[in-house]
Image 1 (cartoon, rainbow, N blue to C red):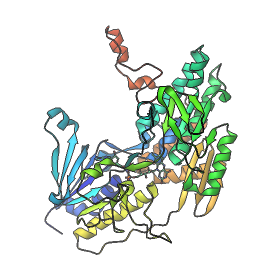
Image 2: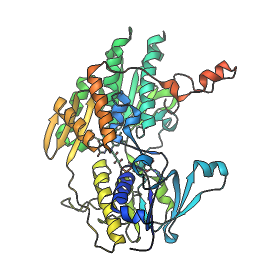
Image 3: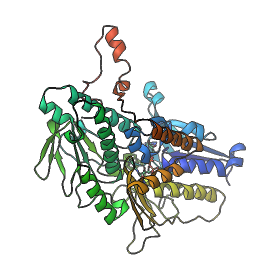
Image 4: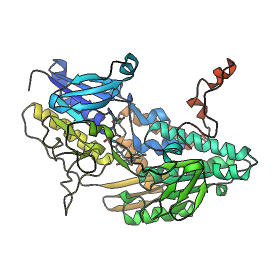
Length: 458
Ligand SMILES: Cc1cc2nc3c(=O)[nH]c(=O)nc-3n(C[C@H](O)[C@H](O)[C@H](O)COP(=O)(O)OP(=O)(O)OC[C@H]3O[C@@H](n4cnc5c(N)ncnc54)[C@H](O)[C@@H]3O)c2cc1C
């Protein structure tokens, strides 16, 4: 091992957190003797356990419990809250912008390294659809999940208090675009929550609401297989959810969702979950990318042809050596990200010690998805489950996967309490504007958006 190895981990998500955890455990002695140093750069001080976002939106898990605090868990690493804006791997230097560099006006901070782990994940893949950037909201972050929950409940309040049928109709119409697990689970959980909340409104019945799922291909939820995907369509339609396959959103300008089948829905809610693309920061590096913008990687999780650069997760194109047939890359999902992170961490240690590297090989085990309280669908190792058993499996699987015992205990306690008491149906949208009340009292003009248009949503 060299005198002192400086390891830089870019990203504090699945791959970033699990790799850093592995490294700090395996390099404990070296870290203690000052022979190794691990720096983790992440824009947020927490890792988000994304599979719990739909349950956070439904109010079944509090937002604090779907995130894992990086500083506490990575207590032997330097955690820098900031964003990598560029990487010059030839010079082994990353440029990082932090809140402080913004205020100081000094430009980015340069961080030199010896080993680079690049794991910035992915961002929503959008299309140039009129109105999309102005009115739609994504579903990748805890802020979006909670913002959407508040927004849906706020729309019900608007619908309940207006005398204008057009306003009421638009408020009670919710359009989700994209039928992968993010879109289907978010819609399933939010519709279930809104259906429950409707019993506390004297003038809103569940059937007054329009929930629409728009999917460009002929199927939804490919992760659970064709048969279970078909079951999901039937199940959602049974709940009066309008599932439109082979249909695209063409515009959402002027608060009207226009679909490719000619239908038009006045709405204040368009949720965009139509896939992801690799993080744009990858283009600001001198590392090789494939045609879809993912980092070209080997099955040992090194970046192809770039010694001392490593990558995994949504940002990396890793050959799927367990797949039969023509060469394929590992799909961008948590199952691969988590397992790759473990191999990646071990391989960095092996490389520092001059040992041979391990090959990443994992056969996709299937998927579990929740469609609301006590409703779900799953296909795991070829076994198909629906309804309550699938939902139960979804919960137990993710409880076993969410990092740290602390988070597992808190989530389990919340679920237990939720089983004993009625569901929470309160909207705390005003939390997004904490100064509004004081500004009004102080005679100023509140700077918050109009109540029907919370920040980031339509
Ligand atoms: C709602 C939802 C539900 C999902 N459910 C499932 C599921 O049930 N099963 C499943 O297998 N997968 C699921 N996924 C997918 C899964 O969460 C991702 O595949 C996984 O998070 C990828 O891990 P990653 O580390 O590559 O990226 P992420 O976990 O997204 O982490 C990337 C990290 O990098 C940080 N970052 C970004 N840019 C920079 C920068 N410039 N500098 C520094 N840091 C940066 C980000 O803030 C983030 O912390 C779901 C995704 C969503 C959105």
